[in-house]
Length: 325
Image: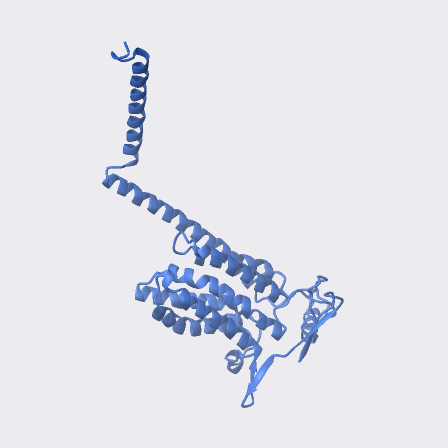
């Protein structure tokens, strides 16, 4: 059991958390895995519930999940192992019960496998992304609370009311301080897991609202990727446990790339879709004899006829009729 303290909140607030939810035949079941599982299960339920609205069959969605989920977990672990400085043993690499899954690795692996499936089955990958995007964000928002239970994914010291501290946090800060990092083991830290959870909940809410008025395939998916990258780019800058490549925070760099790349892709798809719709409309008008030029000419002739009719009416009113005389 770990006591998590919020010294500046309500005059000092404390909560006890345990990493172990329960045990089955002597095997500990951790909250970390359960929380991630709940987020994933809820996302799957909502994806299946809304699949028809996006023109996808439930069977295809289930097949994609059966392929993409294991691949995503493997990629998430390999991404973490690749950039976390440590002499890993094989037993440590395959042990994910204690955490150590990098979300970007999971996103890359999951999307790659889903794209291959969509290509083989001749499905719209962008429509699949539009369906899953909001619920990815929801699952991430819920899953981040697994980091709270593990007392990980925290940031630098802060005096803000929601700053938190605990023995595991202080121990980690002591190690960082001994390595020359500017941290104080006795002061609260940013709960960056909370920041990302809140951000993902906001992204989820926005995407659900926008998905009801979707203009083109890929809009919701690209917006999810861009917004997640944008938020992660800033939140990652507060963390003390970032995966590094030299002096570069990997997640911060990928967040920036996600924001720029998927923001640009969304703009490109939007402009292309708008142009295609305009061309289709022009072609239809031409086929029905109502081209843009014809419409202008028709409107002009209509105005001239109206003017002519008005002049004749005025002349009749001025001269009168034979009966009037």
